[in-house]
Length: 168
Image (cartoon, rainbow, N blue to C red; front, side, top):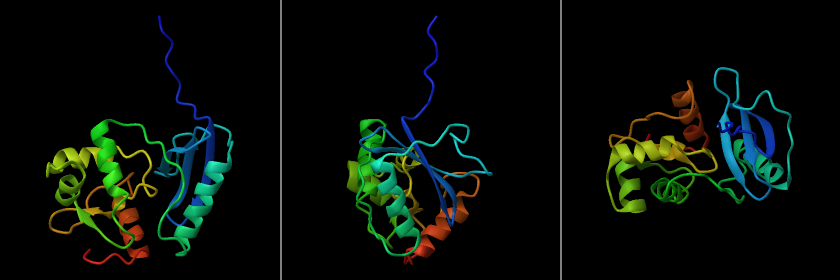
């Protein structure tokens, strides 16, 4: 019988932000996940914090972003996912600060397909929101759609307001 693999990150940091606590995990060379507090908890609340240079830099850049001083991030990311998901996430990284894109536009530019549902599933699977800016995606009618956690739409609205995004 094989024992289950436990989801214990090598490095773990938690940052207080205006949208709640944010948890960063890393492998020593890159950020591997980012979670936004949901109903008062984070995925690894029960684990001790152990940061490294990469997570410290990511936390600093996020603090600068929330303070309005940073418009882009320059930190190594290593999201785990399929080739299709990674193509969509790469496309998200090209959406500028203060801009929005529709699911169809993102799909067409990232993978040559307007498949909104597949694009939506890839965005929902984004393990590093904020740093990979999935909050910048809206419906074809410009409406806000899902985002991370139970307060997702409020968080998405807050982030777009911070960026003074037009057309939403």
